[in-house]
Length: 142
Image (cartoon, rainbow, N blue to C red; front, side, top):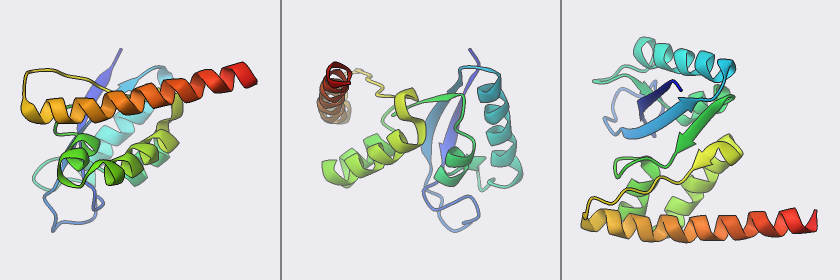
């Protein structure tokens, strides 16, 4: 499986004033995904470069087909929002990623005995449990 960890900017790749960037893991699950991965990589260097090659959510919406995404490590956007903006704001962003990737968006759990990781994992595991419950209800009802 071909994959890449990108830098994702929340302010858009045209913004050259905001150095904020998060980690975003993307894996190609088929040929279309591979082509989208290559497109994202090229665009990150050719159009999104600001200290580092970057992508944004608009590019992910445009090139998500055939890709699998995760919530990433502590430097991912959702984990950083859990830590710095709270669970409610982070859940809105989590749901935005779900809207983009659907069933190809996965919660990534890491445990390196870091306090912030324990905080993030607690929230992510709660969301995973809720999401699984919703899925099982849907499959039983139709």
